[in-house]
Image (cartoon, rainbow over all chains, first blue to last red; front, side, top):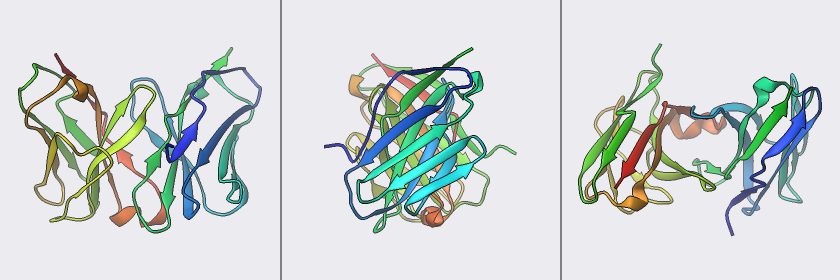
Length: 111
Length: 115
């Protein structure tokens, strides 16, 4: 079982809709969770981090964490064509400082 | 403001050839990493260096060696390239041990093809 699992997609949403991305992780002691965005042919960049259960909002992005279910999600509200990218979920265990990445979910926003 | 610089950006090798990927960062970061990215596999850690003078194996170290030349530079060497090493390689840096922030700063990537 991979440490971090994501639906590979592609996820296609119309402009203005909500894109919902899911991620599950296997290491129950993981404490820190991150979302990276990667445009085609480019390098990943950090867009969200979340450390405690609940929701964290940053502009049009909301990260949700449920440690009991070992589940983290990312919502993109009012999706724009510029949000078309691959979104990588990353997890950092509490006893380590290296990130484990999921395979990524590719999102396409249709104009 | 260069950030993380990788060279070369593209390389084609024949099986058995060797090469070194170079990486340099100008952000005064202590920790540096080499990842490979393959379709459907996400980013996998090859080697990392928590601080100058230390290196450790990651998830997929076989077939690779690294050198932390100084605080700025971290190179990745393929001694005898194999087709399975065809991939996009990313160098990244961070504050020491990610300092809990989880923020990696990536280079632009090096696309390697082994024939």
